[in-house]
Image (cartoon, rainbow, N blue to C red; front, side, top):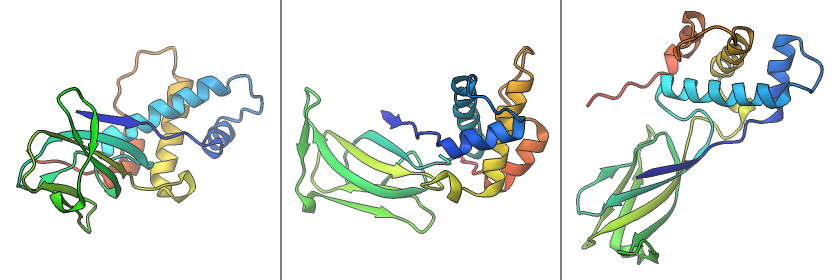
Length: 177
């Protein structure tokens, strides 16, 4: 089971969207923030990775084999806790498991003589800050939010327009099953 805490869309992103749309008043800020969150989610689904640093909690069945974490690139693995049958978290001795983060940001966990479920809390994303995010990704998110705002009365698909998809294409990670 994977749980996440969505990143906060910063005021600088809202200001960039308002500048792009030439909106100076703040009466539509809530709507625009909502559109930015939706655009960020569409972007992350398209590129196959979290754009902004996101906190995740993942429950897995412990075993001796290396197991990949669901999201990448992993920036940090924060905590590893055993889970009781009732779902309570129990601290694990440091020598009962191993963790690894590859150069490509793939997070992995391996248990030694562990059985049952383990909860791993970690952080993953391309960038910690909006301003450090690659410019084509930022521009695509802003343009998609503006596109949705401008066409809000039309029935739209969840696929980004071709011009926006072209901005994100170089960052797309495709998982082979």
